[in-house]
Image 1 (cartoon, rainbow, N blue to C red):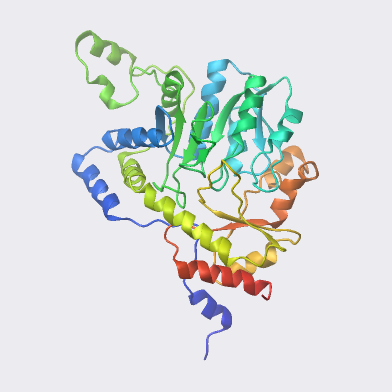
Image 2 (image 1 turned 135 degrees about the vertical axis):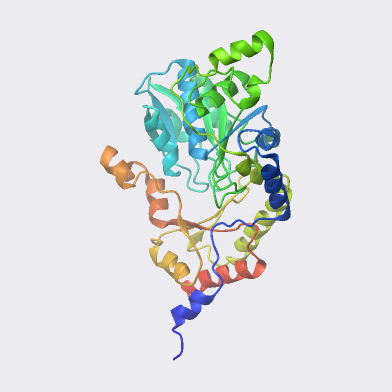
Length: 401
């Protein structure tokens, strides 16, 4: 009995939106962690934080257990430092991963949505002023799928209205925006190293800042809100009166914090990949370029990735939006042929947000279009030129071209 067409299609190598493979450096560093007999915050965590901060033009980085946790403690730190009240407002783009808005609720504040730019899918600065109220305290621009938000006008508006900026850079590492690195353009930058991200540690995230006091506050909030005199086991490597002071305050908690820590194992993976980031960046940009070239001739039906002048696209993912059709038939066509897809970050149409706010989509027409017609595919460093060619061919076949 011959296999069906669908079975033969499924036997093709699946093209995923992301991947991870242990390389020699990762394996070596993990063996060093095991040999050290130390898995709590140590030399790999410290080395990863220092190197990551430097790669993003920042003085400080705090390694925690997810990008969501980084966002959570970032907003908590700013709320605590500036005495913001429950119910104060934070501006969030209408297209982003659900965590960006969830952490606002978890900090007992209110997300106010701003629609996104039709070409880049990032927060539209021209719409920010209309969303401001006397209770607005912060803006969370999102650097989406590898592309920085338009930070110039966002920073100007924030300065004019005395607003703080948290950069949600969970999907965008290393990118420059008009000569400055993401993560250094606001008060705090937040990154993710979850599975299928640019750098993969299994679980993990980082918060970056150039403010030393904020860095201490972030690290405390990550560690149950513990007194900053004792945030990891090396802090009691002192003697005499100083040791006695540390011992007396080791179990003092100054904030309502969280257990958001990571281990040396995750840090070892992160450091290994960070040290090879040049090759990762080169491969992802190459694959994105090949995919753009491979999808030529479909401009009348598809909008592909854009890279505005001065904003470097790092291509964690590759976005595709149908100009006038819904996406579901094309997405199913790809999935049936072993090509993985994801919707482009639907937020305001999610069941939980519909229950809270009702139907928001009429107020956010660009988000509504992206929700209906936008998805992404992979362009990660493990994809080969034949993978890119097959992906492009499958898209072309859908349109009969």
